[in-house]
Image (cartoon, rainbow over all chains, first blue to last red; front, side, top):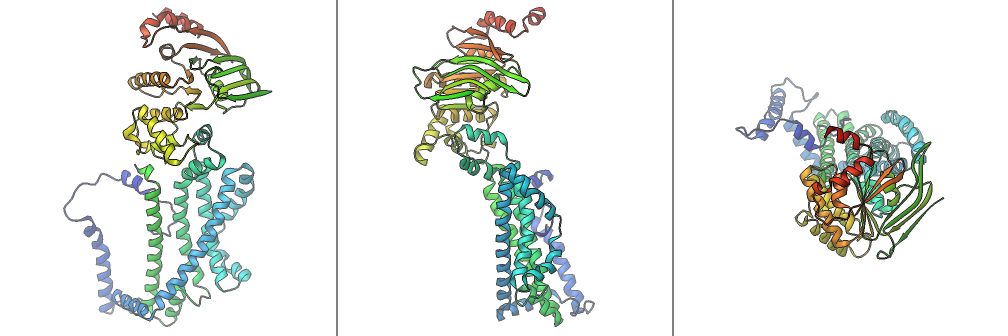
Length: 274
Length: 249
């Protein structure tokens, strides 16, 4: 699944359980599943070599790889990746802090819920990418609107899932923690937080996907650095190899953060999969 | 006004004493000036139909429910084991038990929790996740968690009703041996007459918000339900099912 997909994926084990039990078959599964993508790549390369596919429209895979290696040696690829990564990290951190604070306020108190939840549910329906022109008007054309767009995109999916997680915590367990003599803070730490964690992690994966998507959109406009700049600059010179290479870097970054959250899920939710 | 007192003088004062306990939910009077006592180290069973107020009484003693009037005196610490084990699924068995302890270092708390688990026969499950336990094992963990604080009053809210018959009998033996070892005052809420009669020193029948009947079970343990048919009939009579049972017998 693409990390940008707006649909939550069930936790890996559930998906595995729904699938029919795997029977041992001849040949490695990896080889079988890799066959068709490799075939497509070969077909692509052949189409370019025979002139069916013009390099002005789409460069062949080998040339994309060469261009990327070249950008790497010039240092531009690393620099661009660093700038883009920094935007996502700052924007994501801002959005995540806002989302978690608001979710805790809404999830833990009635007044907080009545105050925070209605506007959040209303704003959630606004397609945040459409706010970019406004953000540019408010914040100018430098880093600020880009980071704000990412932060906005992150806030809502993370808020919604975290609130749902907090509300879904078994009240009987909270009550039991009270009987055991745990303080308000102890109940929050030992019961509410771990109880809300599975839902929070779902929100985390969704919001990271939105963060990358927001970055890509934000970097299309007025960027003077970053992967988006690399791509638009290359496009103006007809360098489709660099354009596609930039897209590949975007997806690799998205896959990397998604894999990181999956790893956290596997470690932190070991109790559930046991 | 309702008042609540907690003491720790467990040898002289009753484990629990309530008087004039009243609780209303809207117009519905659940507890109607109820008086009851659990002596120090006494095992009392509380029988009643659903809706009789027995759970509300237990929740008042546990401090989970605030009565509208009356006094509640308990000898602390007070522990509760519920019908469902209510373990935190994200904490390993040992940490679930240690969670009940406030005093001492983390190592000391874990050490005490380990001893409590050994007492209920779960030493080899200390590192297990609760979701991997059987129903009986989970309920034994819940008992260990309730006993690890050395309670003056142990409240058992139908803790065996979700278990299969064989496991339930094992749990009865376990509860009796733990009770003999630690001597907390015990209030066992149940709707199983045989369970009440085989375990308790005294059986109280609650109905319409008051204790309507008390039976002293002065029989040596272990008890065989077959030897308790006279008391059983008495309790069935009080609970209003005597006629029907006799007719069908």
